Image 1 (tube, helix red, strand yellow):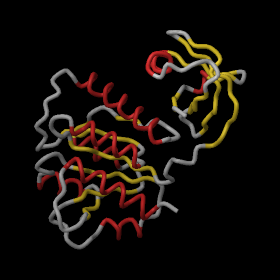
Image 2 (cartoon, one colour; image 1 turned 135 degrees about the horizontal axis):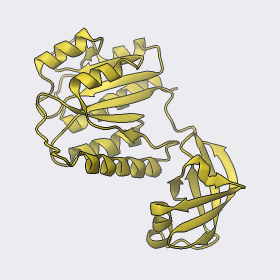
Image 3 (cartoon, one colour; image 1 turned 90 degrees about the vertical axis):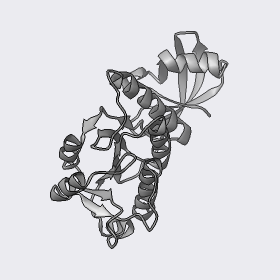
Image 4 (tube, helix red, strand yellow; image 1 turned 45 degrees about the horizontal axis):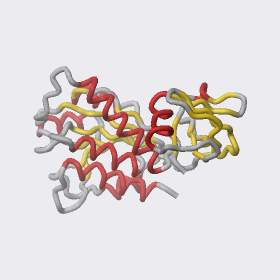
Length: 242
């Protein structure tokens, strides 16, 4: 069944109102009919199996048939601090990392960042969040992970201090493997720093370490920016999930 997300206030009296893009997708893209079933998530860990009662261009009303808990969210919340990559690589990073289980994504400007948003940041963030929502629907997430506003590297370092621990994959770190970090980790939240093309500068690595971010190795091979975050997330969740 196709899945949609609504705000909790759209759920009332055993019915759910879907409007905006949701209504357009149900009516115009899926060409759904009255009586067909859909799944609606409230973004807070509950899913609703519903039967469509009415459809028009602006609004779809669905009757709740069943309610069940969504247990697809990882227990450990991973925030990916992704150095802004070139071209459309950020879209790939968002899509795949959300499918894997990342809780939040923060785009980061670094010394080696080449991309210039130049007044297009708001539009980019809107687009990236639409990609995040589509990925969350596709893989059955219990929530829509958020793509935050772009931060500077120093802002990102301050932000990650709110989490239980954080790592930065670094090609010059040879001994401390990410698997070892995962096996030693005790907590509920982790930040992962991934550099853009060209990686982080030596001064950024030094600053991160001085502020408690642990350098780790992902293995013998140097990974592309669009690959590294995905691999790091997969390893962590594999080691940490029951």
